[in-house]
Image 1 (cartoon, one colour):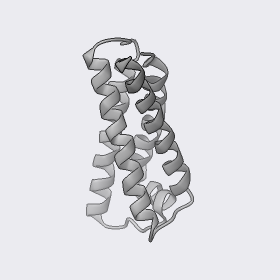
Image 2 (tube, one colour):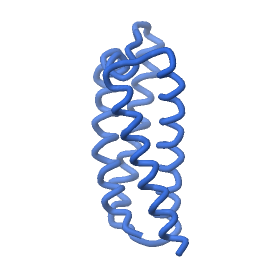
Image 3 (cartoon, one colour):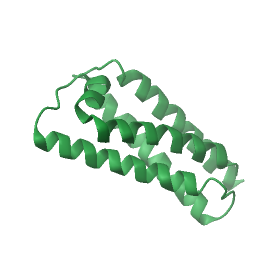
Length: 125
């Protein structure tokens, strides 16, 4: 399996998203879903989500040189779950809310999920 490009792309993308949520959760959420994010609770939840994305970026970055083995396959499977879950969540939210970044985010997560599926399918052969 060729995990390196997926791991690097994930690390770069999630660092950006994570930092945006940590620095300005209200702005990041407004761009993504067009909704307000104006309470202290919203800010805490947004920042916790940002830290979670930074953790995902860190795991991906540290795994970038792992080409084989169950740990690398497990990370790809986890990224598949994350990307597929993100697509479902955004699509559901998108039924009622729509920020300028919603559909680009959906497209990005679909592409990343397909990439993960392709890597997992190639490892089975």
